[in-house]
Image (cartoon, rainbow, N blue to C red):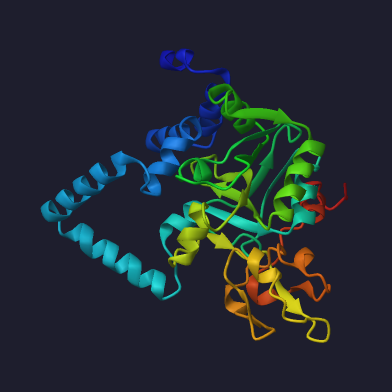
Length: 321
């Protein structure tokens, strides 16, 4: 063992050992460690909320003047994003939208699984694995995106890390902002966040061992991923569903539109207008309709849903749970 690792907490050592087994480079291991060890600093930097972000931006501009080819690479990346091929960033760090019933199944999965999801489910190249070790180990902690905002949504403790070594790593390093919860307590948090109109995302990251590690409950005013999506970085994958409106039931009251985090719904002149292209199929609006006029409908053009029962079936070689 590297003697420097003796100074790390046990969970951090386990994380680095797994990264070693996967052949991660030193830079990638360090990136993953920093992300899990200092998530609040990390998110504030990438969202520009930390004072150091301005200093880094000035440094980047200085490098641009020193090396103009950097500017050209960014220009090409932006052009590729507009053309629909997306930025590499989205391949490395992204979320899969999940309706509440599937998010509930995930936190109650109750068994270890290991598989790579098809691109039709999680359409990214670099982080698609669902590897759950000790899935009953669930830690909820203060949302780094909300913590970065001056006037965040509440409650703060809505981000869930699942499995090892991630759950222990967050708990050991952030014991004042994190706590262990049972699967039943996790379900209660998911349902409460759904009642607030917030969206469940299963998050994947390349430097976090290239796999799923957390369920975040996101609002458009605080969430960095939703903000990135709004600005053209395809960081979020649709649930595979789209909202369907029963026009015979809908009275255009607009109550559902208040809870849509993606700006897909709007009521005008007692008529509900829907921008279907914006709908991510989260289902946050469905339970808010007093007339039960909304439902989720599968849309293969948006990819396939992340179905937990299928995960369990595939992980057990088709033998079922």
